[in-house]
Length: 174
Image 1 (tube, helix red, strand yellow):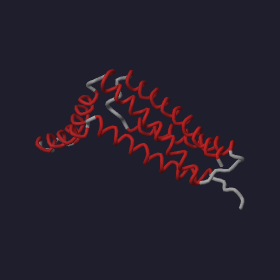
Image 2 (cartoon, rainbow, N blue to C red; image 1 turned 120 degrees about the vertical axis):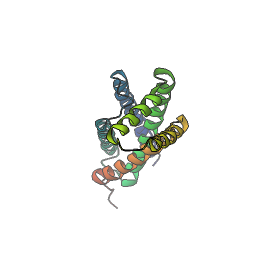
Image 3 (cartoon, rainbow, N blue to C red; image 1 turned 90 degrees about the vertical axis):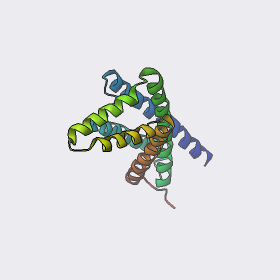
């Protein structure tokens, strides 16, 4: 049982660091293309595909070192652990991005978002836009955005782990 616990932890750490590294490389690519503040839907889809692929690969690798067995609870533990480690790495990157690489990232994001909102909804009153912008600025604080990033990663990691675990699981015979 101790060996299985160690292999779960090592799987979480190994693949969490790999997912965090891949995510940072992807985000740096967006930064160098000056797209890091726009976040088009394709970026979210690619990120989700990367996370899904890596979690499924981690489940399969764990299953191989665990005599071909993987329970749903093990898949969820591994998936949440990988998501947590990756999210923590992503938070560190986000803090470096917003404090060192491009301190104007949040302002660029808000400007881009509200310019797009005005273009898509020209009849929207200016006071509604101003109110929305004030609320967005309150939530753009690093602590709040880090909390949302962590909660989002764990939620998505849980959903992927649940579905992936159901697909990949193989219970031990009783």
